[in-house]
Length: 77
Image (cartoon, rainbow, N blue to C red):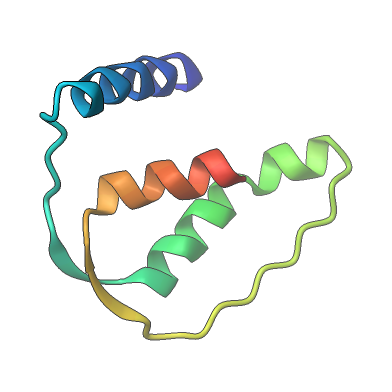
C-alpha cells in the first residue's frame, strides 16, 4: 500500500543518515523490472487521464538491489 511505502521510505532516510542502509545486489534484467513497475502504474495513469508510453531496450542485465530499484522507479513515476 501507499502508506507502507511511505513508512519504508522514511525508515530508509533514517538508515541512510546512520550509514546503515544495506543493498542486496543480485544479477537481474533491469528492463523486466522497469516494465513491471510501469505496468503497476497503468490504472492510476488511466484514471488520471495521463497518456504514458514506455519503451526500454530488452535484456539490460545489471547487478542491483531489486527492492531499491523498484523504490526509485516508483518514486520517479
